[in-house]
Image 1: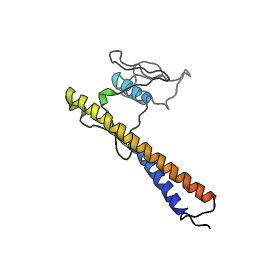
Image 2: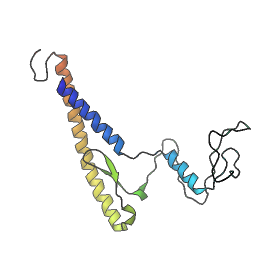
Image 3: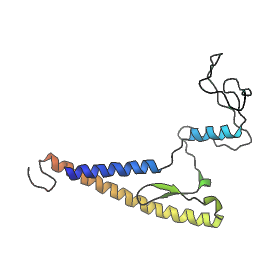
Length: 165
């Protein structure tokens, strides 16, 4: 039982490391940041110029009872739109590299590579990621099978060494 508990704790720690190592930023947050950076500060409630240099805060009183609106985006920017169920690709940021431990990262100097280097990198990383993905899936299946076998052994009244209790 102790080996099974240790195995589960290790799996949980690995899963937590994978989750925390992956950068996460929702598309909505990205769109809001782009819109905020591309348009002048305006009052969220009225659409007019804000007093001073800051926009109205969420705690400001709204006299007309309307829901505050986001500032309009700059029409000169080419901001992609996405509908429910569609996907969007960030190819200009480069490929995502799948590490052997299952974590992911990007190439730091992607914007400085030549087009030939980018094409070669895409091809090599795609092949390597597929091999690593298959290995990780196999490891996951083996760990699940081992956990199922350990659970089956506990259900029969055996300890982790296979001896009757």
